[in-house]
Image (cartoon, rainbow, N blue to C red):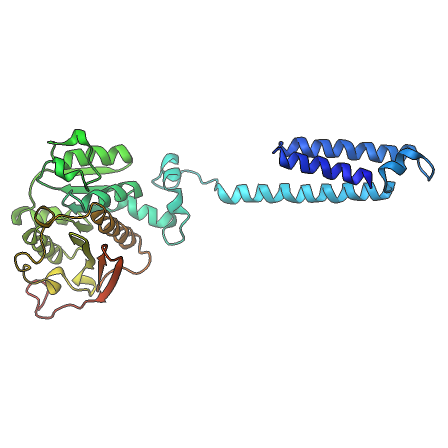
Length: 342
Ligand SMILES: [Zn+2]
C-alpha cells in the first residue's frame, strides 16, 4: 500500500501547490515506472522492496494502463472543446478577420449569427437627437456593427448634458453634438460609417433624409419634432422606434403602420397638457433613466434588423425606475388617426 499512498501524496501536494499538471503527471509516471521496475526485477514473495511498495506487477501495469486511458480521453476532449469554442472561421462575406472577432459574441447567438450580423452591417439607421436617449442607443448600435449610422441634432454639448449623455466627455463642451458623437462612435468601432447632420430636423428635409435609412430611432425631447418624425416615417413606410423619458419614468414602442402596428399619433395625437410631461430641462431626469430607455431602443433596433424575437410593435412598454416597476400594454392602430388612418 505504501506505493499507492506515495502516489496519492504527490498528487495531493501538486494540487495544493498548484504545480503544473505536466510536472505532477511526470513525477507520478516516473514513480510508477520505478515500482514496475522493482516488481519486475524481484518477482515472487520474500523480497523486502516489492513488499514495501505493495501490490503486484500485473496490478501496477493495470493501474498504469487505466491512468493512460484517462489521460488520453481528457486530451481528446480538450482538443474537441478547443475546436468548438474557437471556430476556425475564414473571413466570411463582407467581414474582415478583426470584425469576425469583434462580433464573435453576436455570431454565437442562434438568433443573430452570421446572417443577422450581415444584416446589421448593411443596415442604415437614423437616430434623431444625440442627447440622453441617443447617447446609449448610438454607442450600442456602433458597438453592434450597424454599418451606417445617421445622427441629426442641432445642439452643442453643454455642462449639464454630461450628467446623463454618456457619449460625451468634458472636453466636448461647446462642440456640436453630432461631430463629437461621430468622433466617439468611430473611435469605438472603426468598421462603421457615421453621418452627422448638424441641424434641426425640419419638414423640408425630413422626407429626403428618412428615405435614405431603413429604420429610425427617435430620442428627441420635443413633441413637434416627434410628430414630424412620425409623419415622415409613416409616409416613407419606415419603422420608427421611439422612446420618451421624464424624471423617473419612460416609455418605448415600435411604430410601423405598414406592418400592422399603430403610429405614434394613434397613441399620442395631441401634445401633453403643459406641466404634465416636463422635459429634462424643466423637471429634471435621473442620470441612468435615458441609459435604460436608450439601450432598449438599441436592443429593439438590433431585433428589428436581424428579425430576432418579438418586437414592441403594438406594445407600449412603461418603465418606472423610481419604484422598479415595468408594464407592457397592448396598443392598437386608430382607424381615425390623422397620420396613418384612412
Ligand atoms: Zn396613426
